[in-house]
Structure formats: structure tokens, C-alpha cells
Image (cartoon, rainbow, N blue to C red):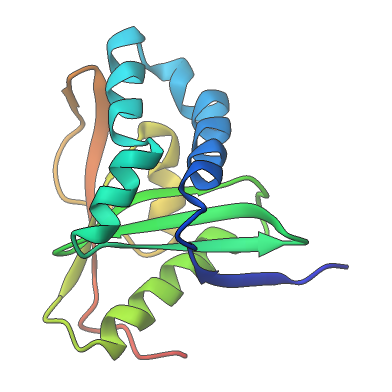
Length: 160
């Protein structure tokens, strides 16, 4: 059984990462969106935009299994999980990506007391299982419906 390697996205992987995002989005999230929401999502989730956000201080962690990306997490300053998509389900990949992102933030000693996310309705339960809770009601903006959520980091111990 091949092991999953967690690491930072390489400079030339933006396209591959966005392909993974598109695959998962199209299957699980897009059915809940209309054309406006899908178009708006991909204005945000494309290689050029991803590269710009990383260059502006964000970071992307990936899960790699047998030289194939099977998961990704994008962190956007100051405190937001911007994207979290996983191809292989029920293997703890999303949780591991999140915990490694938290570890990186704590190691850098950034003054962050919580993480926020705008969860798709599909992913709300997944985020709840990872310690997030609703911080507001469902909202639709430019065709994208999301649930604001947050996770307190004050009680999160450095685990790595």
C-alpha cells in the first residue's frame, strides 16, 4: 500500500492542483450551484489566481500518493482555509492537511487565534468533524452559497 506524502505545493504544480479541485468540485459542489456560481468559483480557483495568492503570503499543502495529488489545502492570510479538496475519501487526508497547516502556522508563531472557512453546504459536516462550528447563516454571493465557519486555535496543541 502506497504511503501518502504531505508537502508544500511546488512552483510548477498550480495546474495540477487546480485540476484536482475541479474534479472534486464538479462532482460534489457544482450540482448545488448555478452557472453564475460555477463561473465565479473558477475565477477564484485557477492556476494564475492560486499562484498570485501564494505569492501574496498564502500557502498550499498537498497530499501525494504514488506521484498523484489526492488532496490539497490552501491557506490565505490572515486566518482562512481558502480551499480544501480531497479525491480519496475516508482516509483522514483532509484532517491531516488541516493539522499540518495549523502546525505550520503555530511554528511560524503567527498571531492567529482561529481559522475561518466559507464552507460549501456539501462540506459543512466535514468541517464540523474537523472542529469547526458555524459562525453565521448560509449566504449566497455571486451565485456561491457558503456557510461561514471557524475553529478556535487557542486550545490546539502543537502536534507535529
